[in-house]
Length: 129
Image (tube, rainbow, N blue to C red; front, top):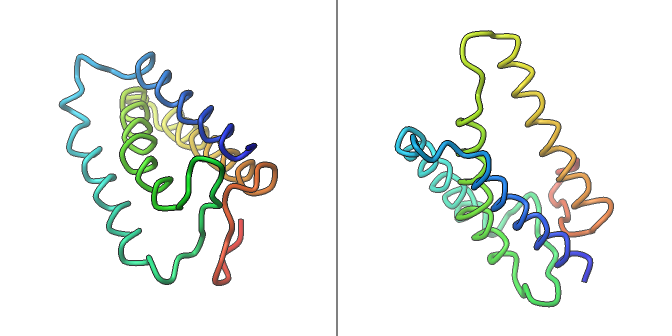
């Protein structure tokens, strides 16, 4: 039940964030990058289906890791790309580096929480956090 709660909260947080923080007036500027990220994630999932480096542990409602991967591909990643590119600082390199570092820390924290606290992701084939 903890895994499901974590994933629902994460999904809700990303949906709220994309509607609050996204640059909706200029969504066309980010559309091609969003599609690229979605296609690459789905292609990587397809190519590594039988030799995955991690697997999503299933919960009460989610019966397969494929569902989690589809939610990642069609909701989480597009929302991330849209917010990331909408708020990327222009001009000052230091601010750009700090902004990228902020996002790396955010997703590192989410993955560590998902693995160590929630138990929603398991690493395989020599991969470890």
